Image 1: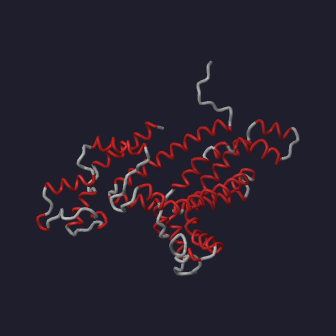
Image 2: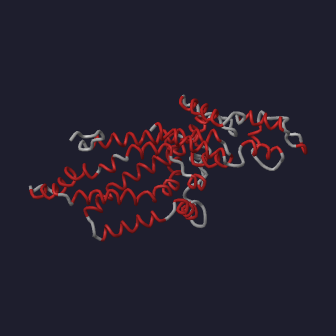
Length: 339
């Protein structure tokens, strides 16, 4: 985990050094009236001298303000040292720490991620089991066709379609167009707050979850089919056990191994999943939109800080997944076996 995390940060940092249009160049352009972001110029006054532009001394002051006056290796070392204590730095443009920005954006990403996670698991596992038991029947064919069509439709296309149909577009005005809650949400009673939140989440969650059905459902089906065809299932049936007993007492645990072991990574990922297109379409200010804007603005502390945090969480999730393999199936051993 440690070399992987270090390698990800090193490669990203090196790539950033060669990306044109950094924060210094953007601020100079903003000073010249060619665009840019006014917030970034806070604390930098009197550096630009009209038609004279920026002389070398002023440019050096600007580089020092952003910390670019130090060699790249020194900046990388200081960055990693700060990250070890979870000091992820401060945004160039938002004037907040990276951790504060992540916490501010988390409600949107958690809402989308957790709803997508639970709906996917609670729908796809029973559906996959039903398809495995009824393999080759009209039910199996029809459900496979429906979920594969849903998988083929991009989430942002489905989101736009839902807005046109049910968001006050050309047909029905049933669901809100934007936001996580209504503007007067804080003034509503508790039950109305819950209903208002759920009302706002219907369309974005639907657009996010439909494409996830196919993979999980087919994985569940194929996993159960593989177990159903094994010898121990024939033996259990030969002993006179009922089909439900064979399915849920013998097949279920073995068939669920590839699904349950992926549960920790999917659950942790649900907290930090940001969908740029879904968030943009439904005007949800989450982590996906934050990451995209940070790349465009060359807000390096946010880019690198969020990358460090999300990579670390992903590696921890992979570690938990490996541990779950051993807990669920004692036959799996990671240590070498003496022969």
